[in-house]
Length: 60
Image 1 (cartoon, one colour):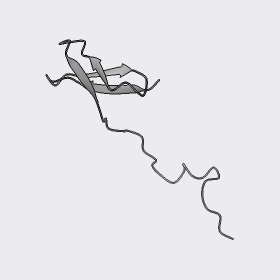
Image 2 (cartoon, helix red, strand yellow):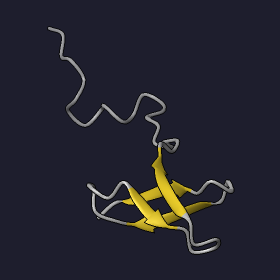
Image 3 (tube, one colour):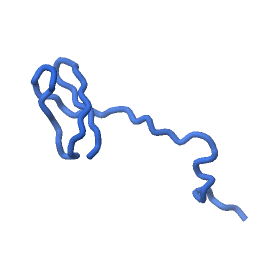
Image 4 (cartoon, helix red, strand yellow):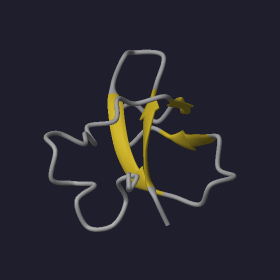
């Protein structure tokens, strides 16, 4: 199960391990309904080495 972020009406953001189809949870701080939000992805492919293991195009 992936980790999702949920935000309540008071602005509290909570991370939870939930199923993909869960859209809202009860906020653990204020006990109101918290809705799933989009969070930033920190995954980056940097440099020239990540494709050197066979993913680069081969020119003859």
